[in-house]
Image 1 (tube, helix red, strand yellow):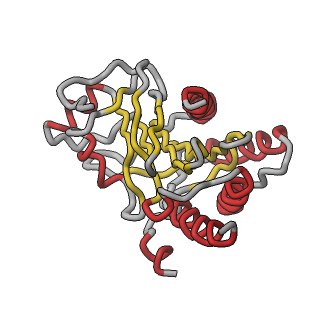
Image 2 (tube, rainbow, N blue to C red):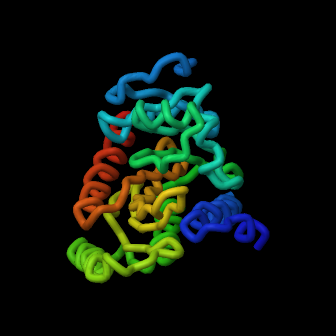
Length: 248
């Protein structure tokens, strides 16, 4: 129960759930890039649980911050997770380093649960983890793709029909984006408060099994309308596929 208490935000509790699941299941199954932004198309290798895992950039506009600058976004990760990689637009990185407080319009994070970083995750274990996360987001991984898309569209229409007055005081789960072997992704919308008007942000939360390790990928974009979620769907699926392919 202590692990759940650590997770103050609803969508971050998913990482705590994974830690608890993996802890039980594993028992049961007895380059310095700080000086310059690399090109977004480049792949980089990061150490995760004694593995060297290749992580590609999610889009051509987002670049990994580098070991010196990545610490700026450490506060975005819960204490139960370790930040592995962080991707921002170059202009956003500049304003971050200058102490700006403008919300980031688009960025991505890769994290690993600290207490599960060295756990060997087989396909059966990953399926249990993904199914449990799906229940948290109010969806069913066993449902067919059309049912999942229908649910997502209903949630979007409900949100957009009240776009003038709706207030997202806490993360609003939208449901499943996609599911396939070794990866599942979910969408939500949350409100980011700043000195100016509050901003609605759409996020894709991806749980990924790569080299027998489990990673969380978070992809964020300023929410405008359902086209934002369509962008999240395509971009997060392409990103997950690219990472899996790079680590074959």
